[in-house]
Length: 292
Image 1 (cartoon, rainbow, N blue to C red):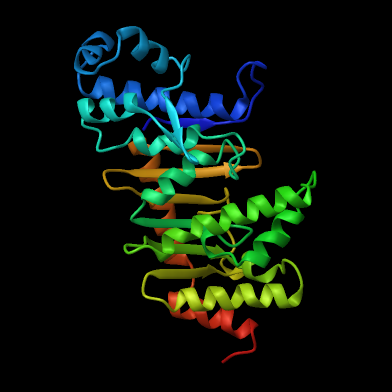
Image 2: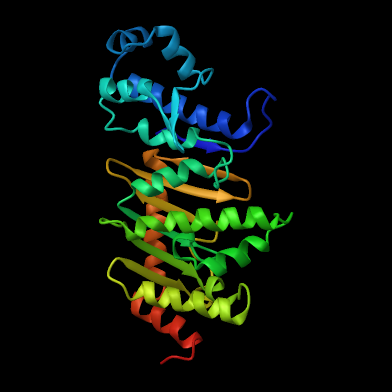
């Protein structure tokens, strides 16, 4: 996967913005895998039951690879053939959910991340302001989304909440990813929602932090300047590579470029060194609940 910027932008009326972003992502990945296999578009076309023109149009995002829909899922024989011919391990097929209806609960710029997150075997990151989505309670997520401005409709808030809860289903799988998050102290000091809502969120963090597959560290205010002041980041350990994800309001950046992955990994390691230990962090959060 190349260095990919996902930024909402104006699109022609004939091509809805979410579909265009998803198609560009798919097109970039198809081209990358083809070139990695040392094939031209014509050579790939000879290996699959599709024309060079079809390959070219899909690679330039002028045509969608989607050919049919089964229930809520899109299907693509073109994609299956390309995955097999290019020996991608199903990489292109895993992108297909991005090409579903624009009514998907996830924002268009966030969908690529959800696909990679579902593949990850380990997820590490730094949260500077809010609890990471995978560890949020439903009520906390709802109150957080209600605080956004311009305000969302109640219906949109609920759609986004359900999308966030859907992401957490990977934690219930047979092989859930390992989680390791460093939280700035602001995350656990700034209440979101009522006292009841925020207390439940802190309890969720304590419970998660005491589990075997999740580690939580707190970066206390007393540490002053640290490697995470530039903002949130997530590092995804994928089956064959690592990806870095950072975001700002309305935009996201995903990359597997070695240099950036190395730099972000070093930053995360530096954060772990300066933060409270896992045990100290759990005790700090527990103390906010009045527990010893």
